[in-house]
Length: 407
Image (cartoon, rainbow, N blue to C red; front, top):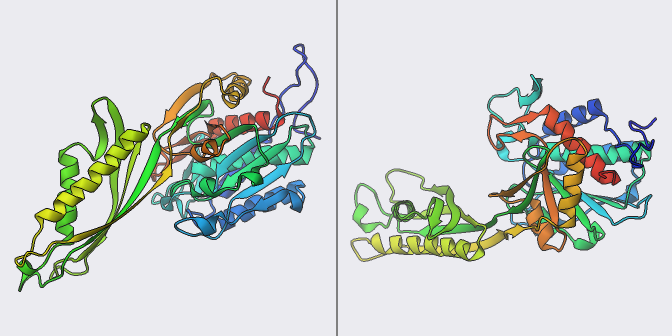
């Protein structure tokens, strides 16, 4: 028997289908326990595939691509897609989430405590970002397959490598998605939160080449790459170009997130590797932030000089990981998502994100996408939690959107 009813009520619309709460909770617990940081998504993907096949998905409906072979970090699995033909005549819909978690979540031991799910290991995050999104979308697919629920044509997509720059969504082949006209993505926040825009992010790799010398016997002959980096970062901090940035009404952020170099205290360090980023909703201001970062390092190179007049060098590479976007509130996917949230008796909350989402790239690919939350809290920390009630709301919203029963 289906876990729902198709009886018509007084408003002549089908009653909403209901997801199996126990099965959904079991599924999200299983998914959060799987190790699967960015580039290491194969085990999670196989769990999704096995769950789909057990629910009755034909092998020919499940597809993977080679996106991981085109990303900066490589990986062991590509994007995963399930395509289902519609049983009703309507535009194709896409439901998506990302398979990967951040490294702090490796080793998660999910347990339920007082309406929340946390990791029993205090040294790890939970991985609800975004295994809760995977579970919500997968639950919708499983309910449709097992119970043969009526539905429009559907594409389910589980992206890889979201956490390291939205690489899976960037590299997806549009033809693989079969041209969805309405697209919904599940990531962080409450189930009633609809993210209709997000910032753009630019990633930078800086390599400082100095000159090694004995730090005790002849430090004056060296050019310290660490000193150059320190001066540049201090310059950015002192002049308001690091962290939260506000200049002449323009807003953005920057961060030097990785710095590596040196092997011994008795050697003037000749090489430092740095990774940084700049973000802003304003494309031109984001370019300005990047320019200021580069100029700070160029100034620092001039300040560190050996006794023989030697200076360091900089190798700079950068790339746009994702551009900013903002959907109109009249966009069909936004209106439909609002109806689905309201069908649960909740009031939709429109939001703009200061982080990137797979929706940045799907929207750039010509598929306007609204993102919804699953009840994740404190993502990317050891204090991460999943609100169980919000997670079930997310599952219900996903099933409502997948079956087209939001009105």
